[in-house]
Amino acid sequence: MLLLGSIFVLLAGAFMLFAPDAFYELTESWKNGSASGPSDGYRLYTRVGGGIFALGGVIGLVVFFLAP
Image 1 (cartoon, rainbow, N blue to C red):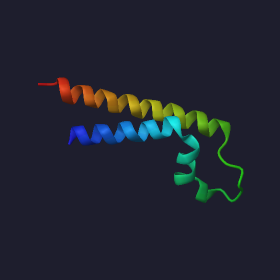
Image 2: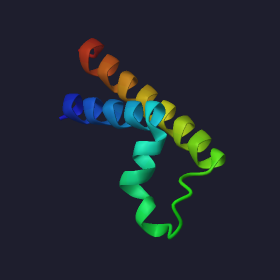
Image 3: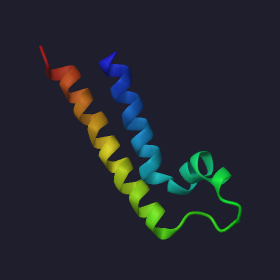
Image 4: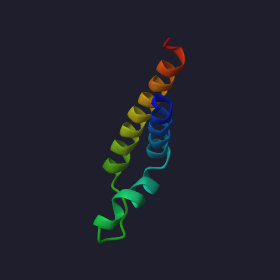
């Protein structure tokens, strides 16, 4: 279960890190009535959060493969 969770967190983090605009379309665009798209701050914080998620996924994979 740790393996699947780590892979999921890693993929979600990579998606947030490399495609914050697509992440916005999936999660937040329905709340916004205008077609302006995400702000620069949203993009920055989504990338930072994605990096943290990806790091957590990598750490989970390392623990899975290296723990006895």
